[in-house]
Length: 45
Image (tube, rainbow, N blue to C red):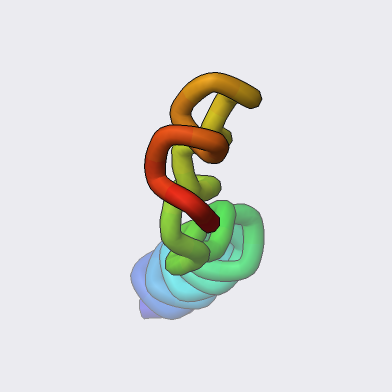
């Protein structure tokens, strides 16, 4: 019984470590496309 409880405790510890080690998802949008000089002059921006 103690071996089973130790195995369960070790499994929970490994799961908690894995949950903390994952990278958060990057939710920032990609940067806007930069306009060159010709495009900005033609668009009158």
